[in-house]
Length: 129
Image (tube, rainbow, N blue to C red):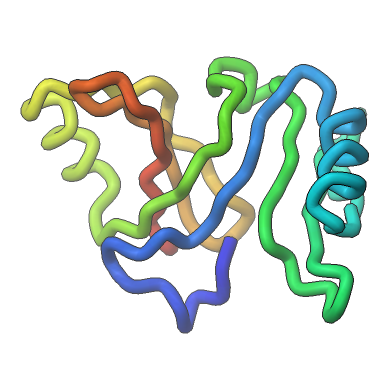
């Protein structure tokens, strides 16, 4: 996730792509977007951070649709910073949206879930620890 000093409620703090074959897609974006890829061990397989070639700044992730990511749709997914994830999940459903995943820990930084708005668009809500 983004540096915690940049997290403000409502900010887009991360973007990633969850797909069946993250190895293949990360190589695709190396060629198409000019990013470099960096393996991130998930135990039995690697997901990938995608880096700017000029300074190795992490700009996004490409993840396998396995484990906690198995139910996430194959699409670019933005993560929006929120103050109270549980409350935002409640409001999402109250306002006609759907919570698509359980709440997952994001390293030691925080937690997130994936939601769908009433029109069908999908995003993640992210709360710092």
